[in-house]
Image 1: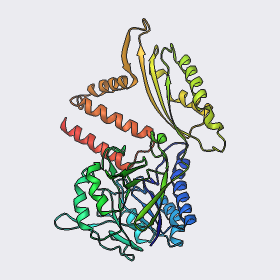
Image 2: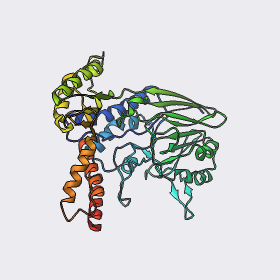
Image 3: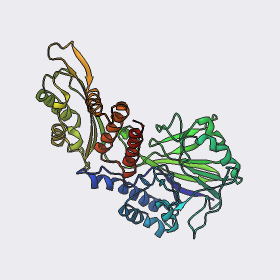
Image 4: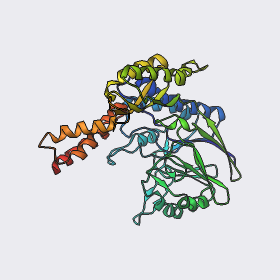
Length: 426
């Protein structure tokens, strides 16, 4: 039996830049991308859609995100096209005694959430999916057996043998939120290529997620078996280097023909401005403006491009003025004049050179200065001076999260709990 499906992953619904003027537009980007994939699924008349984890950006989503997700997936439900999914690390809620949003969508019929049960010996048991309850680990579409396993953590390779032992059928596909080392840029939740090889013997198609960069894994003989489409929208800075899209797959007589379909993510660009030798902030700002005009001016002039870009800005060089004199507000004003970015992340790595001699460099970057100032403030208090390094690191971590505008309540809570532990030790 011929089967046609779409394989996507890492949608990250709900992500945005909080307290930013571009908050609403960025929030819409991820729903816009999913809606386009849903529209393609209907146009291509696929048999099902696979989502290999991280449908949401966080397990604790807002009610409006849940409602918008239902609205976006409704066309698939109306067309009786199953949307089969597993949970990624971003989808998990911290309290497992509470129902997750993914489980709720499955119970309502918008997803088929696959999650295996565990045996007393620690093995896996892929029970058939129960449509009424919205639970199970295995689905049959035609004569294709679809198994699902979400994020299992840092020791994913140790689970491979137990997965293979639990599957006794032929014509198998595994939906698995895991990365493969040497392909995936993600540092946690990967397995080694050699650890994944037994899966190639048991499953004709390994539908991966987790890493936001697309790649294909082959056996030593050159047979493709593992496919990761990456994220269809740019989620984090650095992803401007990756293709963005999903796989449209045709299976016939145990042969999987895959086609990578490109999506239309928001423009993203990394910019490095060298201000080396600038004598004062005014001169540095002029150099900054000229460089941006040359590099980014074309972004706003591209034919058909109406979405404001995301900019990752890095300042470098040795200057004869204090780096703090070049404020973020001044930089943002120039950026708005040149390309009107939706969001900017600024890394000021300027170093201060002594005004007396260009050869006498303090060797201190803005990051060094920030750490010194914080350490002095912390050590000035007898309550905290015993652990300045840990508290400096904590303060800068909180600062970075807030400046990025995407900090979640549970992330801040975890950092604050850490501060309480540090305080308790001092």
